[in-house]
Amino acid sequence: MASLLRRALPLTRMSPATSALRQLRLSSHSIQVNNDNFDETIAEATKPVLVYFTASWCGPCRMLKPILEKAVDARNGDVVLAKIDVDEQQELSARFQVASVPQVFAVKEGEIVDQFIGAQPLDKVNSFLDKIVKA
Image (cartoon, rainbow, N blue to C red; front, top):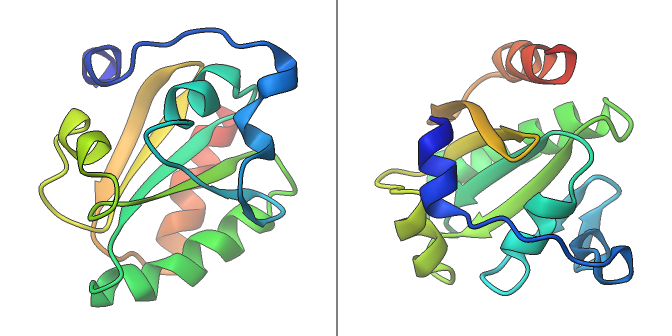
């Protein structure tokens, strides 16, 4: 999985003043990510990032979104949720080879460490996050 991130994401360091975590905050621990701020967001992350590929027309995505937000917010900043609309950000979707939504990648220290596809119940998302945050 790590090699996919290296192919998908040429990590470059940006100055802290340009940190993407100040970009379009959706909630206290969620950000909207686009092609312009994606590399910067992941490179600057000092904590795990859930990269959530979604689409406005996707029913399972609409079901998963509040579950992810609740699980991430419950961790009080230990993980960040980066949301990407596959229709608006087709280049990012192609870089990650996203063929189905919703798809969630866990990125830690610049490496993909886990992923899942499809809507999941809250207990499964919490277990997924527990592994990522504690690892």
